[in-house]
Figure 1 (cartoon, one colour):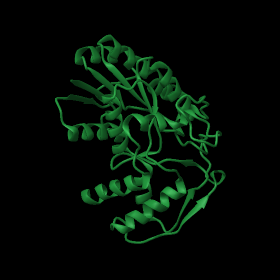
Figure 2: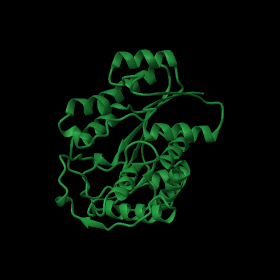
Figure 3: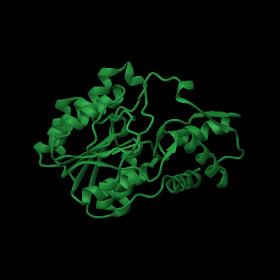
Figure 4: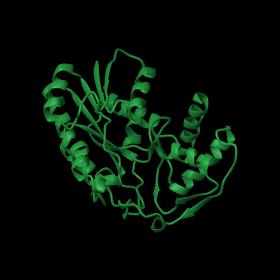
Amino acid sequence: MKLLITGANGQLGQALQRAQAMMGGDIDILAVSRAELDIGDADAVAAFVDAAKPDLLINAAAYTAVDKAESDIDAAFRINGDAVGYLSRAASAVGARFVHVSTDFVFDGEAGRPYRSDAPTAPLGVYGASKRRGEELAGAGALIVRTAWVYGCHGNNFVRTMLRLMAERDELRVVADQIGTPTWATSLAQAIWKLVAADARGIYHYTDSGAASWYDFAVAIQEEALAIGLLDRAIPVLPIPSSAYSTPARRPHYSILDKEATSALIGAPPHWRSNLRLMLAEVCAGS
């Protein structure tokens, strides 16, 4: 089986490669970065995929600068929208299955209950709208995996930022009225492989289990990092409302994803705090 992964250097792209290596099997992985393939170039995508002729194409590449997207609209839609269509068509042309990763930001966060995969979408900003456009262009036979609050040992993410700030500052203020579910990139990667093995098609939701605010998440990061020696002192972490932390892009206040259909197919995910502990142990082992 030949596999093509875009976004090779991102936290999910790397997690997908590591998870597959641990699973073993007769898999030939070709993972490409933005420098190797501009997925926003239709001709380049068509030529590259035709030459590679993968059996499976997983798009782990994305424009993820949520606030910058508000003023960089064309770039966000080029990568999160148009490029998905190019990849989907190229995969179809060589008979490959197509997997695309999307986001909780396709919802407005006003429902007050976990969002099912068939719930109406209502993005609040450019990033969410561009990701929704990508879902529309992924094609009827694609597997679309929506996720949220992804973090890992690599790349820019909330956990790594908190660890750095907690080591540098004497106090942190963190938003407490946005609720979601932290998701370890390794957990997400493993779920994607299980969904692929189950021949899943259509939209599936996957995050780790449980719920938290960004404030809850930050407090847990400090507690777990102190317990294993990644931090040598505790600092005050104070809750603040979203209104006290102005950003160009609006964010959903509640974006828990309903994972019932996914859990029925591949099993229930671990709790987010358990996976946070595992991720921090990896950071500690690598430091």
